Image (cartoon, rainbow, N blue to C red; front, side, top):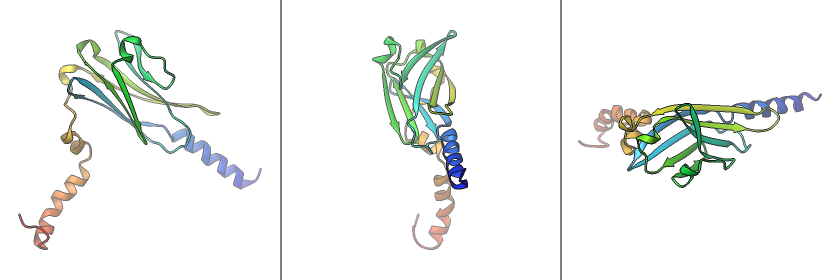
Length: 161
C-alpha cells in the first residue's frame, strides 16, 4: 500500500474516533425550564447522532434524539438546539417528577462506530439559575486576565478608575 494513502486513512480513522467525545454536561434552570448543555469535541465532518435521556427509578426515558424515538409525555416539552460543538436540550415545566440522572450520548456510525456520553444528576432544589454569571464562572480565564491587567492599564494611563 502506498504510504501516503495509509497515513491519510489512519488520520481519517483517528479523526472519526475522537471527533465526538463529550467533554461536559451541565444543567441549570431558565425560568421553569431545565437546560442541559452537552459540550463535545467536533473534529469530524461525519454527522453526529445524539440522544438525551433521563434515568429515574431504573427506567430510561429518551427525551430527544436523532433517531426521533422519544417518550410522548416529553416530546411536547422538549426543545433541541445544536451548534458546532454544543447540543442543548430545554425541558419546559420542570418539576420534582423530572428529577433523575440525565445523559447526553453522542454516536458516530461508520466502519468504526464510537459512542461517548456524560451523566449529570439533577435535583430541582439544587439547580442553579442559568444566566450571565454562569458564563463568567465557566470561562474565567479572560475575566482573570482583565482583572490582573487593570493595574498595568492604569499605570500606562489607558484607563482611569
